[in-house]
Image (cartoon, rainbow, N blue to C red; front, side, top):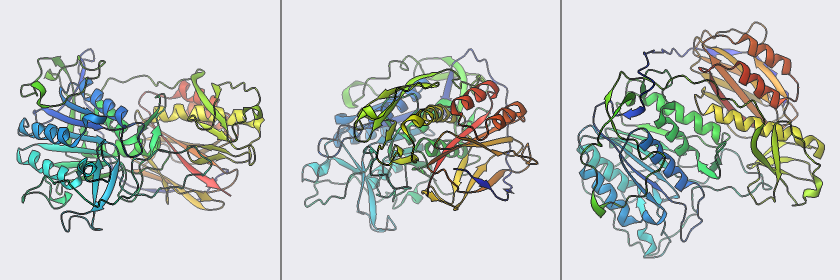
Length: 575
């Protein structure tokens, strides 16, 4: 895209940053309940569905969240994988967790797998009369198979039990229940995986819901609970590619795991507030899903998102695990993450502190993970001998999870359901390959400390001469650099140009643009820092209007400081 800037608008959102002294960085970093009580978790991940379409990343999601919790000192983590997650074991595990819960405990419930919708069992609980349902590994629409599901109202029943024992609850639902999408998938793309099954009919329903008269009617009736859902009730949640990680994953679970490891502490004060948690996870999911996914966040009425501290980060010494952990066979527990299982819960700690600063870890050298390229017709003879300067290239069949699919008839390049570039000759593919490698690296960095940035008016495909707007928040007192990488690899500097303010004097920036060709994928990169990066600005200006995505990575690796926030989001254009 050759974007044309129109009038730049700014608006104020006042933000405050609280600094604190770091504790001894030689001590391990732990996740702590700010109320001093325990953190306990039940984590469920299901890929191996027996009677409906299997998934590809839910088990990895569960292992990731389990590993993040254990590595951060949480010992009471029960993980149910695939067939372990049958209705009996789930109800037994969550009931046992209720029994060992104490006042002020922080309970984490996480489920990754298929979702569905059914007519509500509690009248008036949903505005549209449909309730969310979580499908277990043995579900099928038969009398016996109908038992293998958990109703959303049943989770609310157990959440109420936790609250009655004085606990707080964080519920993470990496599933989907609706059928829409932010953008339609190009029919030439490889099949995408979504966490939602088609509508079914239960002629005989043998499930007997767990419920009583004290159950909440809606989520709003809960008092100490936070919800994170992969998408809203009308949208499908895709399984996505995570940079430098094999296979597919759920973007929400991945983002939550990184947040639990401390990445959500935006201001470095050693505390993760509800506002920081929501903002961090929302932005990471938005970026990793190529703007197909907008999470839903909810908290109990009366909860202050800016003042409510969900977790603290402390540096401390390890001691014996807390009492009241499960013993014996009454709870089905999967094997712990071997890398993380040696970490114990913190008891003696220094002052709250964020992780010690790290150098920017942008990779400036040749990226070794290959870009997988396929011809839509399966004929690899169309391709020349590629000599990419930035990465290696692996030619694969179109059904073997390629990063890029080239259509020899139209010469379009497709990636994960979107057209990246139109009318690209074989000799020009090397620049698109280099761009793909560069953006993969940018996405990886942008999950570390993301700069909030969005595309307006929506995440649909945009057409010639349409207005779009880049909206950045939480930039008060920060210098901002904004540039675009077109589908053919062309760099375009967008901000600052000329008299643009740096640092920004207001809390948010809006940069209006108008769509121009060449069309395809646009990757907008936002960098915000506490000090102006004049050398980086000048280096990027030298790359302006050049097809140099690999050189852009090298420039960022040279000049990007450790405290930089990076946002990397795409939007998609067509003639």
